[in-house]
Image (cartoon, rainbow over all chains, first blue to last red; front, side, top):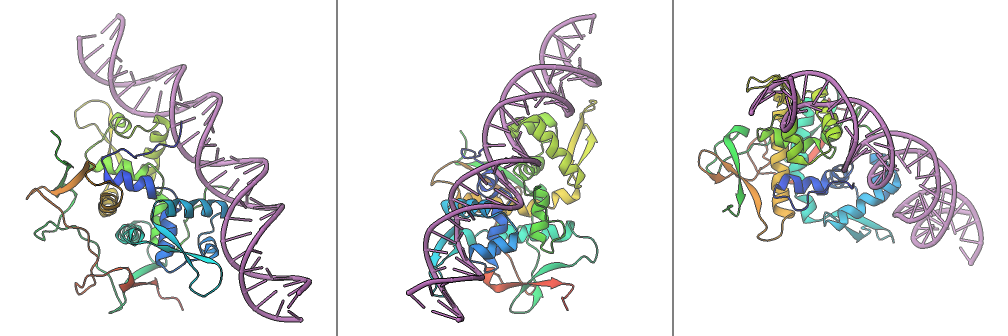
Length: 150
Length: 150
DNA sequence: TTTGAGTGGTTTCATGATGAAACCAATTGA
DNA sequence: TCAATTGGTTTCATCATGAAACCACTCAAA
């Protein structure tokens, strides 16, 4: 009777959720993408209990999503920064952002919007495209096991 | 001391995770996208305890992500199917799939791959683009509060 | 160089969420 | 009509979470 794990599973979605599927991890990554680096910054931003934050930071480091660095301001403290693997979660957060913005707010309720810095315009919604560029929807796709099952 | 909620928060990511951020919900949605509809199908596929599955299905229905329909095979049972809001989670799952496939498998470990049905080729990785079509990365974007803060 | 505030945690403990199993009612097939 | 299947609910032990207390280290100022 332990918390279920998806370690051996062939579905990449399940594997991802096995690592990132808890309540706080993705929010920590979001804040890290916004530039937060210090324990206290995360704690203040998220309002999470300090013991839980400590656990999660260790978890994210154990999975190679965050790493510690000496503080950028020359002090003796350390900072938590995203690895390449962590930064690659960007599309996941963008997709969650889009869905939340569209389906989890009342009309007129204030929310944050992602802008392209260069132009100052909202970014385009994410699109799934085929190898040849055709726009794809759920029903245009299927899954196969790789390498092919015998 | 209750489980924290992000209801009043302006960040759409937090709102999304407030609804979908628990361990099972996204996996249920994934299975629903694969065509599963019946309680027993979800239970068998996920290996989740029946009481938990029952809770999660109710949760997803309460949030308008799933709805119940009379069974498509003419029997008296009911089926759980995705709403429009639920189907819109497709990009989220695609993004999680991509990240998991790239970062959570050993070389050569079998995994599932998403194909474009029409051509039978793997789909293109998700890309974030600006309004004018430029490819964007994390550092090319910023967030603003909408409507604008005074 | 002491001192007091701030930072970054760990420990403790009460409570809530999870998971396994037993139980049960309705439906279906034989 | 009877047994098996389906779709749950209930119960209870255990795990995870959250709040608060506690502690060590760092830093800035006196």
